[in-house]
Image (cartoon, rainbow, N blue to C red):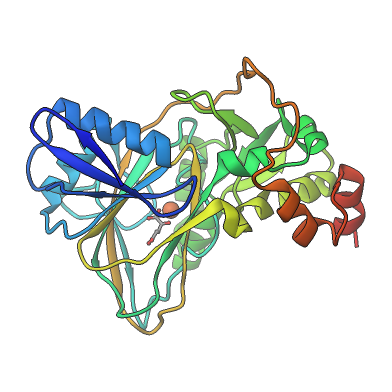
Length: 325
Ligand SMILES: O=C(O)CCC(=O)C(=O)O
Ligand SMILES: [Fe+2]
């Protein structure tokens, strides 16, 4: 456990997994935080990609005030929002509304400038189940075979809000209204490999929730490559898993990780509220020191047991022959 001393407060950082996820202790988010504490927490967010807090019995105002320390807040145009506080997004699941965030994604990547991060507070948690998984997309990038990294680096993919559009169609939202939304949120093209604006880390930035296709590739090739990239989030070696209790909070760096809310608790109830911090337009910048080869921490094991059935040298060709079956 690390101790970080700020002028008025000392909080602790306890990792959940080697590269992603750390629990922050000895902090009370019902109180305003100092600039030093804010900076220390932001550094912890950069280091761990998602940070967690326990036992934060805070009000909505305090939740919003905490999130607003890290940037402007945005409200979600389609999801259910608090009537008086549109920056609060409600995520309520029960017998009549089974969980639906059980697909790997980063939030709102169909915006030109997707969020920096989200601060999610669970107020009611099932006794068992309803965990959330987070995947380190920097580790996932470093674990990609070199030829696949080379294939996708510098390429762009189209993102859209089809997931929400389908929901709106089901609810009977008019074609005019949908056309208005299409005009407000035209499908952006984001770099497939995104460079983190603060750390310079290279990150896979396509997700099964909101990415549609790779620009300039045939539909078939695009689907194969995206499928391969999406699958990277599935490796437990890149993940951490958080078990919620009422008043737990997760604050994730939406640029650097993806998340998946496990939908295993139906018909139990689970209630969460999210504040979302605006981000910047994704870009790719070449690293000063390009990766020479695979990241040894992961690749041997991952390749041997998953992608390549015993061979230790997966290549694009192998992936092609596997995915084209
Ligand atoms: O409920 C959760 O754990 C996460 C849901 C989600 O995808 C989100 O809040 O962005
Ligand atoms: Fe999400």
